[in-house]
Amino acid sequence: MKVRLPHAPYIANKIAIDMLNSGVIKLLQGTEPIAKIALELLEANIKKEMALEERVDEILDDNDDEIEFRQVDRRSMFWLIKKKLAKEYDVILSFEDRFSDVSHKILEILWQEDLIAYSVSENRVKNVIYTSVEDYLNKFEGIEDCVADQIENYKRKLIPGSVEYDLVFERLYEDELKRRGMLL
Image (cartoon, rainbow, N blue to C red; front, side):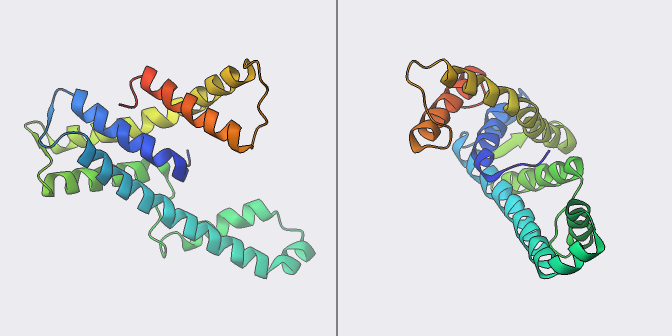
């Protein structure tokens, strides 16, 4: 599943919370520095993919006439070009492999910065991080649906896409994350 930039802070917070509650990792300076590092690495990873996709769109736009003339499916061509350029942009296309790689990088920096201590295997700690990402991604659509239902039941009707709707949605989304123990 593709991670969007607005979800990065929530995933980073979930990583910090899950590490705190893991029972096998000792946080030496609290959750904030952990969430900050996780956020930086997640955002960097997401931005690399965004840059790759922008380049693919540019290539497709430059060849729009040829694509139309040959009646090529633009979506299929997008994925072929993305796959070809992924290595150049240092983007791992397999989400499982990408999240594993990001989890390892987060763990490495947390260890180097002396923010955590653990007496279990490094792989077990990395799995705590990986599971946090995976768990968030498996649940966020359900959370979004729950929040949309709450907004739909408001007495005052909000228009999707409006500033007011977005503010209410974000507040309710964060409340739902807190209720589920995914945000402090």
